[in-house]
Amino acid sequence: QTLFIPKEADASEPRVGGSAETVKKLISLGFSVIVESGAGVLSRIPDREFESAGASIGKAADAKSADIVLKVRRPSSTELKSYKKGAVVIAMLDPYGNETAIKELADAGVTAFTMEFMPRITRAQVMDVLSSQANLAGYQAVVDAAEEYDRALPMMMTAAGTVPAAKVFIMGVGVAGLQAIATARRLGAVVTATDVRPAVKEQVASLGAKFLAVEDEEFKAAETAGGYAKEMSKEYQAKQAALVAEHIAKQDIIITTALIPGRPAPRLVTREMYSRMRPGSVIIDLAVERGGNVEGAVAGKIVEVDGVKIVGHLNVAGRIAATASQLYAKNLVAFVETLVDKEAKVIKVNFDDELVKATVLTHDGKVVHPAFAGGAA
Ligand code: NAD
Image (cartoon, rainbow, N blue to C red; front, side, top):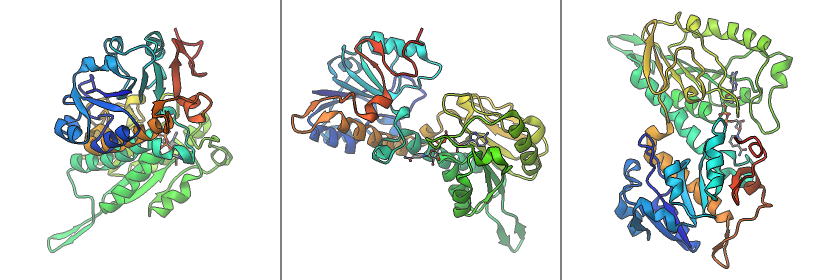
């Protein structure tokens, strides 16, 4: 059985769905692996590295022989034309708001799995792409902030005088936020953080940062069974905004990461708030691709408003592509392993497995995921 790892067609995507390590693993599972020439270049994996791991180097058209295609992003209509009916496609398909594209996957007859829907259970931790990529985005956000900030982050006591430590405020303390706290602390900043989930408070403290939030009854109840944030009431948002507005005026760097699954990102920072920050302050909006947490943030750009730099980099995990691909590829291969009958060395998808049920979007010409079936145009 053949497994294909293409070069991402989208030029803004430097990541790749394989590494030398995962190619070896895939071969041991019984696959012949074809990697499209140049697929790993932007992740610093040259063709020869894939080759010495046992893959053959091919071209885009080799997709037609593949039983499994491992991708980063959703295949385009053009790419889909070369996939064979019944092929398994595994990627981050970004289905919300893209129902027409999901229907196209169904029409192409592929069995498509979206890695973002992997349940957050112990067994699937090694397949959790949201975590592996968000962790790196949180790290990179601090590195980007340090780069844009024209001052030092740590306190420095020198013969020429003392430089105070930068104050960094992290808004949204999921996987990305936690890593941002840890990274900013390593660089010597004074770090505070906020979130709507009460469970976060202790985690923030354990990383040596201070927690800031309106801790009323709604806050105490604000967490879904899956551990995700709920959308908060207008009243709560107003109270929280008043509290953070005072805090923001005294910060040098803000990193926002707040997301609610399947909903637009909540607006947390208004221009009125950041216009009180001192000139040269930096805001990194990690939620910019999902509508943004920060007023005035522009996807893909750095803009300066009232002397404050607002950074809206896209695909922040992709800015650290070599590491991001290494971990993403591991996430994929762990999932592929669950789709293979290890003795017979053939693909055998168990549609009763909870990992499959949660992630399969299309099968046998139909959109099958309950969140999209029937609703797709
Ligand atoms: P996410 O990317 O969905 O959201 C980022 C953060 O934004 C979350 O902490 C969320 O609470 C916060 N947020 C949402 N609205 C906000 C608002 N108005 N103001 C402030 N903050 C707001 O989150 P994530 O990184 O995917 O993590 C979600 C949870 O899942 C966390 O508890 C995480 O530890 C947990 N998790 C569990 C597993 C596992 O058990 N296998 C794996 C990964 C993550």
